[in-house]
Image 1 (cartoon, helix red, strand yellow):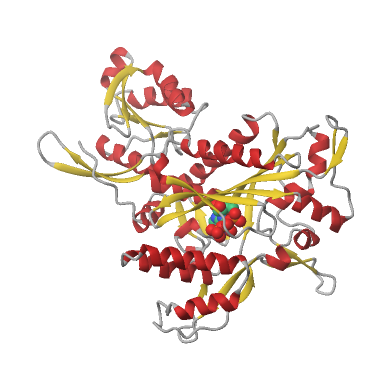
Image 2 (cartoon, rainbow, N blue to C red; image 1 turned 180 degrees about the vertical axis):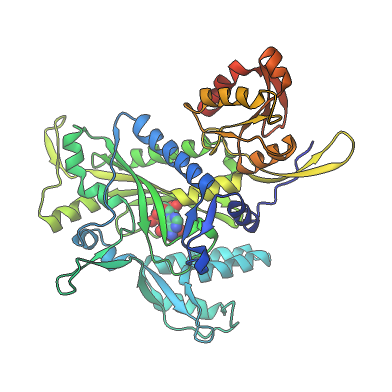
Amino acid sequence: MSKTPTDNTLQAIISHAKEYGFVFPSSEIYDGLSAVYDYGPYGAQLKKNIRDYWWNSMTQMNENIVGVDTAIFMHPTTWKASGHVDSFSDPLIDNKDSKKRYRVDHLIEGHADKLIQNGDQAAADKLIADMDALLANDDYVGLKKLIDDHKIHCSVSGTGNWTEIRQFNLMFSTELGSVTDEASTIYLRPETAQGIFVNFLNVQKTARMKIPFGIAQTGKAFRNEIVARQFIFRMREFEQMEMQFFIKPGTQKEWYEHWKNERMKWHLSLGIAPNKYRFHDHVKLAHYADAALDIEYEFPFGFKEVEGIHSRTDFDLSRHQEFSKKKMQYFDTEINQHYIPYVIETSVGLDRMFLLILSHAYEEETIHKEDGTTDMRVVLHLPARIAPNKLAILPLTKKDGLPELAKELMDECKKSFHCFYEEKDAIGKRYRRQDAIGTPFCVTIDHQTKEDGTVTIRHRDAMTQERIPMSQVKALVQEAINN
Ligand code: ATP
């Protein structure tokens, strides 16, 4: 058996995710809703396992991090204070001929990619550097000139007939209350972080936390993304896993480094090759940050952000103090002083992490058999700890007491982890189906089991099989999950 180089095309992953019950287009019977997706049986479980792994790594493995679960709707002043009402927007440009709308940075980056394909890396680097400098100054006239000077054209109409650049706020709004007069505009949160900031003192006091400490939360966020594409990479409704770490002012550099390293360790602990990751330092800083970087992963469509690490200073807490007129200060008993803490944020998209895991795990593998022929299988090399099913229990036949033995094993194991039971079809076919959903172990119960209590356990990645006592199966699987 040998492995062919993987062909991780996005299209193959999308089809596989749909066919095997991981991800469906939302309301598909009505032709779907752009950039909104539903998770199927295996997808929901995989997503939950990734979320749990993150949650435990934050709140269980760190004595000084606690969790919260705050509401999606928040008082509208929250978003005024956070700066989202005024500046959570993307610069956009429309092509007058095709009417196609682009995010300015995406349009220019697309042109830079073309330059690289044509072997002109230096020109691409200069273009990106020029763009970053103009974006940093919100210089839209300059950006428009950059687009014109480089003769950047629309991919649909092929023309360079552009509108002026303008800002588009990404927050969704709705109305609270049933009577229009009394209704006030509220927003669907575009990030979960603000639910943490407004509860800073509630949490600090009730959980009796001392700085430095963190507050973690996972939950839905909503952004009216203009260019929504690349499957679940950029969605309008998505889930974030965020942690705000509150620190003493002046210590932000060391804590920024700390969380940068910790978060990379977390990613690598899932068994993903380090060369698939890189850090990208921000040139243009968001309105709240004094340092920021992205952790990028090499998706099938190139290196892209999966997580952001931001040194947010005391921006958020100070602004909430200013807008709410409530003190957001912490009393540090070690130095006998009040201060507004600084914050380091780690923010990772759960759906993006899901796509990352699928991209890493998906393989179309050619199997060279002993008789010289070849076979093919699609396998998801999911880490055992996050795979939706950990163990498939497969009696060889439906009779001779084999299902009864299999059920015994099922009852023993299902209390500890997710198992899957199946009696139908040839064993090879059943193995392939489990490979396709990433089940790390299959156990076959056969006639020998009745005689000596042993079973055949098959390892997904190496496809090796060994006979072990049925009584050892649970411990073996459990060890792989904990690894
Ligand atoms: P991008 O530059 O890709 O729009 P961002 O810098 O705006 O992302 P943050 O505001 O830092 O993203 O959000 C933190 C994380 O949330 C991102 O690293 C990403 O994983 C996730 N995320 C942000 N927007 C989306 C989206 N539209 N769909 C899915 N995940 C998202």
